[in-house]
Image (tube, rainbow, N blue to C red; front, side):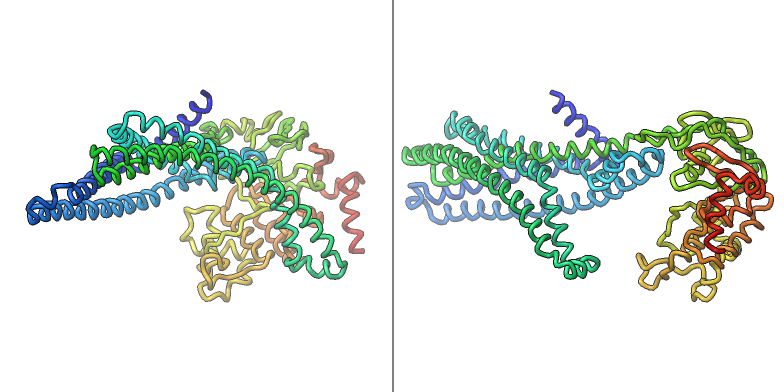
Length: 597
């Protein structure tokens, strides 16, 4: 019962989605389906009548011209209806392909919009990421649910019509064929289920075999295989995986053959009953040769509709599960994004008040009772080992997440009371994992403030501040050159350090009151690093700034340094104060400085 409820629910959900794309789609498909049904059975009736007229006993005693004229008219009508049926099929294909384009665009847009609005926390869960990946793969399955509806309706109408017409030959004929088809349907269901189970349970062996083969062709591993003479061992592993995989596959194929053979024997028995009945009625003179071909065609239609209907259920059982995955994403409502209505001041004071935070699904806190304040116009350096929580502070400040404990105050007001868009406009950020967009340089820089996309002077200025202009000044199209060759074969290919300068230009272009640089020099040489940090010191005047860097020489630019360890602020003060204190910061700074002595 639960299965039927879930299936019906997913079907109705798919229907509602598709209705948003085209309200006339269902009506159009229904008209085409019914017209095709009437034409198919009309052609059967005509062909039966033509054959019967050619084989009745009194044809020779009748006027040949009259008989020929009547048959010719029927043949002409049959040819005309056949042409109409083919044209109708062509119209149906065009109609279907056009709708597929529309619904593909619609569903892709819906998925993009929804994932763009989802909380960042949604993507932290491995199961959620798997769900999202499946959603990207399965996004067109609501369309398949609609095709299931019309496929099922087509089977039902054909089944009903063929049952009624077969019963005209003999009342028990349809039930006999129905019952003898059950073993074949059951065998088909078991075979499909067996294939799915096999793919699920033995996929690892298939992946192992593929992986072992890759070692022999991979440039990074083939030299080592030859050096260590390890090819035979890897081949041994391949053979072991193949042995397990092949043994189960052979056993599965034997089971499928036995079930398929039993089903076909029963199908043949049902067909034999129909053929025998038709021959007996023909000998008795109750029907003609045309009626025999007519009932054979009905049998084919009946069996195809009956088995097709159950095959649809087997196939769309899988589709229903995929739609459930899609709904997990499309029905996901953001929590963090629902902020208040307050608008922050242009240069705010930011305070972490006893803040604790744990990523969704994690067992330990990243931040634990962490407290500090960033004053207006102050440059703060964040120092700590990997995993200390430095980047997490950035994410909480931008309200990608909400704290699991404590509060973040913006001008003494909880950050959740502010409009989320206005709050994020406070920050110009160079993320550690910045994005390299396959757009023009203009677009790459202006992505931080799209309203100023055409402000060429401001874009060039941002590039100069980040030193990106050093390598783009000689380009033929300047800032309108395409970056990467993904969409343009003539596009530019940049090094990691050059891309980082472009990302830094994007942060500068935003011209936000709070600048947040997360490892801005990771891909830069020492000279470029020094130039950028000097520029950063100049630009941060009158703004608040937060700087994260493993190169502690850069942190000396900060007015105040926060040392983060085990999710807490363990030291706080200026560079000189912390060096005099001789604590954790002084130890880390001395460790790095010692390498250059």
